Structure formats: structure tokens, C-alpha cells
Amino acid sequence: MNSQEPLNTPLEITIGTLLRQRGMKLVVAESCTGGLISDRITDVPGSSDYYLGGVTAYANEVKRRVLGVSAETLRSYGAVSGETAIEMARGARFALADETPVSSILGISATGIAGPSGGSPDKPVGLVWIGLSAPEGESAWQFVWEFDRSGNKAASAEQAIRLAVDYLRGTLSSIDSNH
Image (cartoon, rainbow, N blue to C red; front, side, top):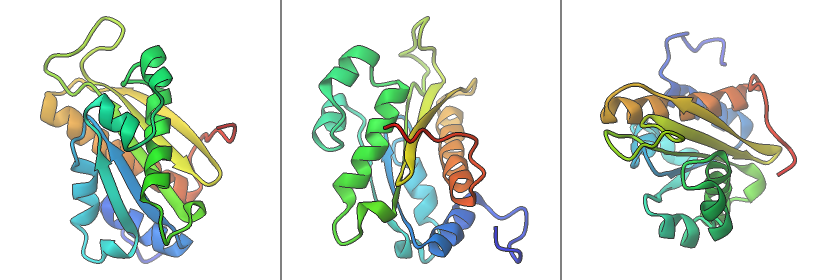
């Protein structure tokens, strides 16, 4: 973090500062958050300097066709899984790269069950997977929120941005370089 940046700086401002410092761009792949992550990022003036764009892939067919999530992943693990979250984040990096090299793009994703229905014993309402795809590797993290639909979406967006900030700060506890 920039030493002049106050501790209470909103994450969407912090991520912009860190992306600029690292010379990186950000892309987002969203399902359960419905564009909320992108909305928060683009609320910051000047975000066009580091934000390339996002894909709201609510339906599995969009996850497959636009983001390249494999049909086998969706069949074996489901749309709400760490595997799908990683493929979404990776897919956004490749789908939205053009003049910007993929090696300088960070991708984040969110897929889950916002509620109030749609849950099951194995995958309850509030279950969300956040994926991160970076040049050094990829990982996904599972969360179970216990809010209403809006709260689950907000918590998921906050956590996705927080994980990206942690990655950019070099404080992320784990990133798998085997993907």
C-alpha cells in the first residue's frame, strides 16, 4: 500500500493504486454478483487506466461459450465450484486480452448461490467461490455467507476485490502455480 494512502481507503481505490504500481490490468468474470464487482471498480474515476472489462456469465452456456469453462468442469463440479471459478477468471483474462498481454492481466471471478432459493444440502444458499487467475498461478476460495440476496452479493464482491488487493500486495496466503 502507498504510504500516503489512508488505512480506511475503499478497496476499489486501493486496487487501482496497486494495479497502476504493478503495471497490470484487471478483468472480471461474474455470475452470482451480476456485475457488482465491475460496478464497484468502475465507480472510481480513472478506472479505465487499469480496468479492461468484465463478463457477467450468469448462464452456464455463457460460462462455456464466452469464458471457455469446459462442459466437463460444469458436469463434474457444477457452476458453483472452485474449478469453475478458476476457469472463469482464466477465461476472462484470455477473452478480454487484445493489445494488453495476458501476462499483465489479473482476472477475478465470483460464482455462487445468492439466494433466497437455489441451494441444496451440498451447496447451500450463500455458498460462493471466488477465483483468481494471475500470471504466477491460479486459486479459488470458498465462502458461505448468511445474508439475504443483496448481502450475499455485496459480501462476495467485497471479498473478490479484497483477494485481488491481497494478491497485488503480495500478502495472499496461497496461489497454486500448477494450473
